[in-house]
Image 1 (cartoon, rainbow, N blue to C red):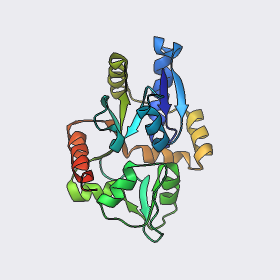
Image 2 (cartoon, rainbow, N blue to C red):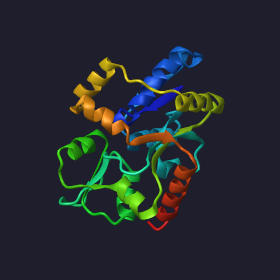
Image 3 (tube, rainbow, N blue to C red):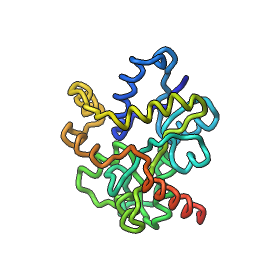
Image 4 (cartoon, rainbow, N blue to C red):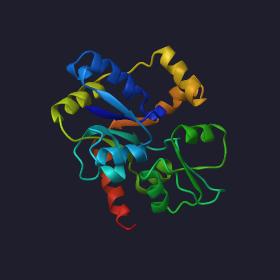
Length: 216
């Protein structure tokens, strides 16, 4: 079994959970990881070279998924447009590039940890999730945990992850800070903006995104 692992900070709590989950289940015997950025992980999943992963919303449509995602209730801090720069898409993301078009925001699209670093420098920016919420009063769903087979396994992951309060060990937080050049304090603050529960309101947000996407 190959699980697509995207090593952005927004999935740090989930990766910690999965490490513990696989240790205590038979999944540890067969779980391997494919590590890459969202856009490349999408392609690997769609070609069935990856069995499950958080798939960008634009590619998750009509795929089997559980009720876990990467969701911003309001602002997200790590999906931005730098408005004073040339119109440029971020090659790591498909959903965020389309979101910028839907919202008619011009500039350079930035996602992930580099976007968070940009935000923390207090440079001019547009937070796309915040703008989406201001316009539609709905959360924005950036990705869903999709799978090809083993529904029971992933439903178990969903159930256990949503009921578990994840405490990030200090050594992992320190490693993440060193890797991303973002302070431990700022990492913890950033994670407060991320939700993983694909609930009814999030589903409405995703439905709205799909409706708007059809115009493009």
